[in-house]
Image 1 (tube, rainbow, N blue to C red):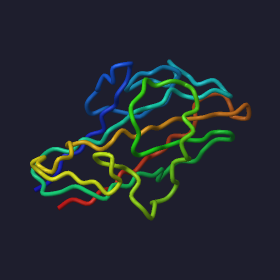
Image 2 (cartoon, rainbow, N blue to C red):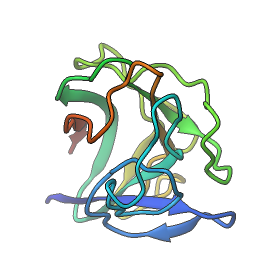
Image 3 (cartoon, rainbow, N blue to C red):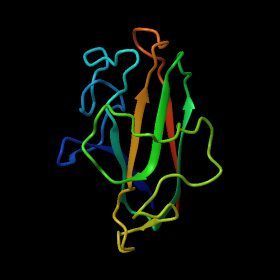
Length: 164
């Protein structure tokens, strides 16, 4: 019994869902799977927020205890990535959402919610009262005037969960 997992991105005013996104690239537009060189973020400006859910399917008993962090990649001068693991969807903008910086090592506590609960769970076959998805996770890249022009360093975000 194994859970299948995908990242789904939500965009536009109506939370249009794009299933199984290929990347979490940040840019100057609200669009999934974007190419950053086509939609660059200018120094001293922010990316559009990214609203992501983790989606679980397949034959599993329970998924719970979800953590997310930046596991690889270094920041360039003036660059920060913000993250919140249980938010309400609003149409993405470039305005600083004010979330905390994404953890840069495995957090000691769960930081992604399910059903509005950081200790939430998904029972297969989805009979727990929770959906088969995490809460919305919000990501945003911020820059300052000191951020150099051109592409930033690639980063790896790790999502970890317990599965029974």
